[in-house]
Image 1 (cartoon, rainbow, N blue to C red):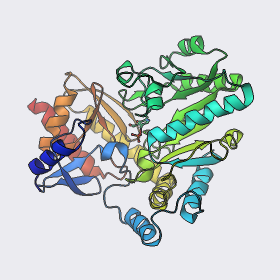
Image 2 (cartoon, rainbow, N blue to C red):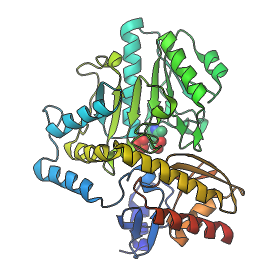
Image 3 (cartoon, helix red, strand yellow):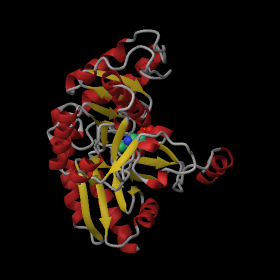
Length: 392
Ligand SMILES: Cc1ncc(COP(=O)(O)O)c(C=O)c1O
């Protein structure tokens, strides 16, 4: 089928919840992807930060297919070696002590929210349920994670939303303090607001939040669905802030392309979730876990992470030379590009015609390339972006 035929099939049969770009992807290698007509693109979106080790990574494919040849699914009634091994590896390379496996970022956050509320219920009773999140945040699309999302635009249509969420201004500690009362059980943050426009939280602010949570026995949840899994040049972004969250969620890049969502907690919270308090049929699917284990082994290597930091810096330096680029907000390979003109959406569309996949975040262009992107691919991506901005 060509793009037009696929598009028609899609339009006729799939609920129109997505604004799609006019391209039908077919196959990829590294950070280069080809559409059904055979046209090549440098991919700086990687399926919204998912394909962390690139397309058709041999090691990842072998890990996944080896597991597929053994057992595709067993259910949580039974033990499974690869699932336990992934959990053990996660607990050994992070400060966390227990993990829960789900299928998406939103689900990982649901688990984090349930854990925080149960911790508080067990210790303080029914009234301490409020969770403070940040304005302009994004935490997912379930009814509860929409509630957690601090943007009015997401609080529509689906009433009633889950109660018990308040929103504080990012990087404003006084505003956070003014929201904290005896009903608060958790503070939930993204260290870099990805969907919100690549807004990087200040280190001092985050460290103050950590201290506040310690003083008041409030659970600090860090949503690393977008920032985690090596994206910012550390295995998890909180390492850049010299803090340890109580609960941390991970998804997207940790799966390398297969769906997985992970909620991790420190020892203090290890026994909060008890039998029957949480679960999901596909959680800890062995095929997804085999892929994630491969990814984790790759990205937890310090040399790999160093390269992510170096490539990020190289990317930023090149982007800063592009005429029409006003500013670059970046940590590792999580990149937000502020343009002089307010035309990020148009540029993203035009880049496609010129052979570059790039996404937006609010008024910015956003790049979340595969972490294995080569310097040659970075050069190509920047030159396509430059050409596109010049043409506009
Ligand atoms: C910070 C953050 N949290 C949660 C989510 C939701 O993840 P998922 O789409 O896998 O449910 C996203 C998705 O973009 C995200 O960026």
